[in-house]
Amino acid sequence: MGWIVKDSATQKIDRRAEPYLTDAMKQRYTSDILPRYETKLGALVPILHDMQHEYNYIPYQAMIEIAQFLEITPADVLDTASFYEEFHLEPVGKHVIAVCQSIACEVCGHRAILDHLREKLDIEPHETTDDGKFTLLALECLGSCDTAPVALVDDTLHENLTIETLDEIIAKLP
Image: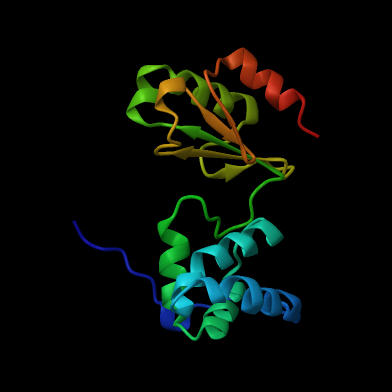
């Protein structure tokens, strides 16, 4: 198996004039987050969470700004952000539906739920509907094996799912 490599030396990063990492954020991180950690690198994950909460994903420009703020390399930020499934490196829909596909959920019927969502939303996992309303994800484990099958809808865990209950949940979304 060969590695597929990108020519990152010439990669262009879309940039906007105003920074993603605002002065107010820097001030809050300096006073509230950095003191909790022995090194600045320790604050990376909480800052990435905050950045995603603010913008609904973590833009590449923001990763560079975070790296400069924490005095680490942009590669450290990208490595961390791309390692964890919970971080989005591209814009996502207004609502994110993440179906667990762990072995427990598989045994309890996650495939039928995922297939139903594929058909209902007309997208595949890790895609967003054309109207920008929904992003569908398939994640490895949501840590609720005893209540499988489960899914996260936005930040809320829904347990013991059926297609009917999932349709009810989706119908109530703004």
